Image 1: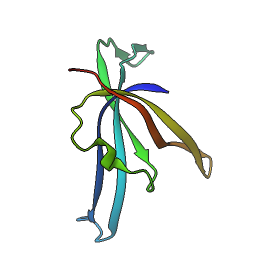
Image 2: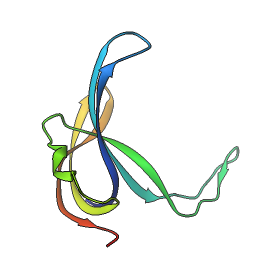
Image 3: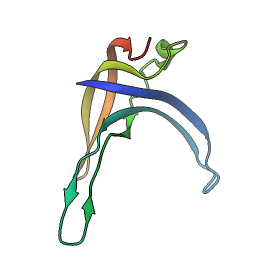
Image 4: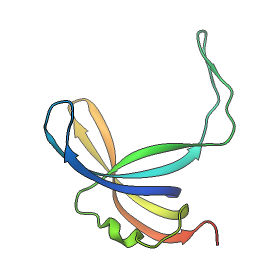
Length: 101
């Protein structure tokens, strides 16, 4: 899936709320904002919005060290099932190219 990648992050620490440790990797992609309308809601949209996707633990994010964002790249995704919910996770990045020189 070809995307505009705004950034990646590896966050870990101890939760202030419950004291539990956390360790997560995330990718932020930019996608077109969609117009939407219903009886109780209306969204007239222009431009892009950021969407955060989880990244599998074994993906090495250091490949982005020294790269100027945003970039275009191909994302490889997998789908994980949690009960009746599906979650898309990034398993790889390829064809990474700077969007701005």
